[in-house]
View (cartoon, rainbow, N blue to C red):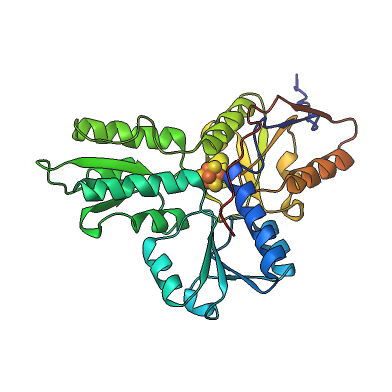
Length: 316
Ligand code: SF4
């Protein structure tokens, strides 16, 4: 007797409880808005203010010029430093060019910079856990005495470290890493170097942690997860990896234009989440597209635990 298999149709959308702008991103975006208002355009911003294509394009339309090298900013002009943090030598270069710096570094990143400086002042060999080439890691590396700096990305990298165990050893982490991968790296570090010093928990920020917890909650019952986020966004990429690691097909999209409905074939429940630098409109667009494609689809979302978190704005 032949068995008929029922083809599933999308019936439910589950929005991750915590998603959208974190306090650091919201504050950095407001800084650029206010600086535009105060100084007019062109307004120069060193590196993408936050890693999101829609945010960057919107600012470019308003006359913001994103640059990497400070030599591209005319002398005696204003320059905004991005939320990811900037190495100290860039502050020196900016001052040499007579630039007025507006610093949009997230306070949670600045806190790590201060710890990096304290470590180096005490001669601590500093293991910096993060993604090589990411803007935050480049910035934080600049606060560590280069003779004491050791960057690692994976558990395997711990075996490659060459440290003087008669001297102090400490660790710091990037704010947007996978919580579970980083826990594994730190556990191995503690096994190898029992006296290692570091923060009680990794420096992974509240926003990254909450978004990973929320995606893990919906991955428990969703058949597919769409992550809204730009390819350059570290915390968005971690969300996709996390749901994949939990066995759920996951796709990252920069905008609704990249949504491929074939991903939803034979799926009943679709989760949607977004990185800490993603405007709410991108998620709303995806929901609208799914609602128009699948009639009577139901939408669910648990209460967001992130409420009322604001960071002070820097002086303009
Ligand atoms: S993701 Fe975390 S560290 Fe980065 S800007 Fe947001 S709050 Fe700050």
